[in-house]
Image (cartoon, rainbow over all chains, first blue to last red; front, side, top):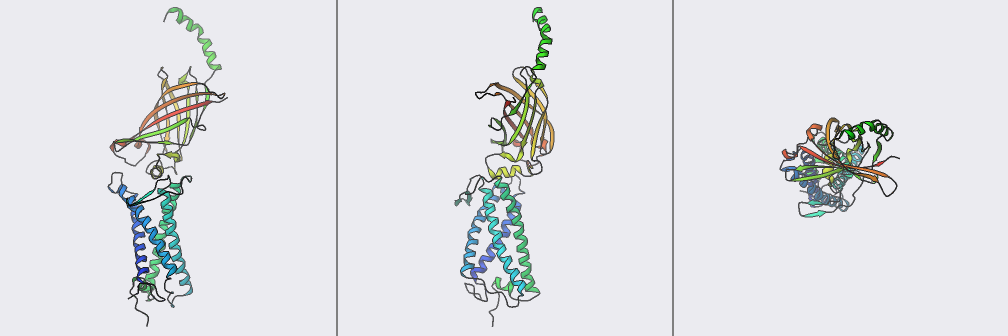
Length: 187
Length: 195
């Protein structure tokens, strides 16, 4: 069983939980984001969908910051020794790019809703005030960026998942098990 | 009308006709620079209230002669992306394919075809409105507000107009409910006479 914190060989429960929390949230937000745009004006979800999407997005932003801090103070285990140089560089680049994309998606989403100075109401709990407003066609520009980056992150996450399956099924190594907390401690 | 006045009128007819051809209708530029012109719309929200909005960017010209208002001509071109309902998320939606489809149809135009003078300072202005790529004839009820010299050496004339049309007529597909099928327009237009 993994410990709470990452070790040289294993992911700890903190990193594992944060990984899956972010994964499920991002996929959920992506589906919700696409679906809520198709709703008719009289649909009960017409206002609720975007409200939940924005609120969860803000909360995910704080979770992601927490994840970056964890990563900085408690780095992930070293890559498996069986990995080629290319695999190590590719995996690391994809991980970093996923973080960068997620932050850009959240910032662009924030800039849509706050383009006219209105705050984002997070579950009627607290407000995130507007900061940058009044860029020419800000809501449209931010909207395009938000949409295409969201598509990109889902595609990239798909590649990231396929790579994990490749390691599990073809290479039969610990890559996937590690992030599920199922890897056996090295002898 | 007395016979005398009638014959006088007939006698003066060639004079007034020649005068008319000399003082032909003046051309005006719509004062969008100083923003003394407004294109506003309103549509019912759920049938419970009116939602108001406007187009911030447009330009146009008209010709007008108060002796022969029926000879007037109006041309206006509106930048559809300038739609402003005081809510960024809604404006983004209004610019999308559900409504104005502004990336495909960046402009809306109005070209007058015919004017019927009602004789009391009001008229029916009939023309082609091109919106969302669809051209349809609409009738705008126009009335004159006033004309004359401005304090800065220019000459101005101003009108207001109202019209309404169904969103469906211009292929605007989004269904906002039974009370919101039609949009009403209010136009306040001031022109500066070209020198």
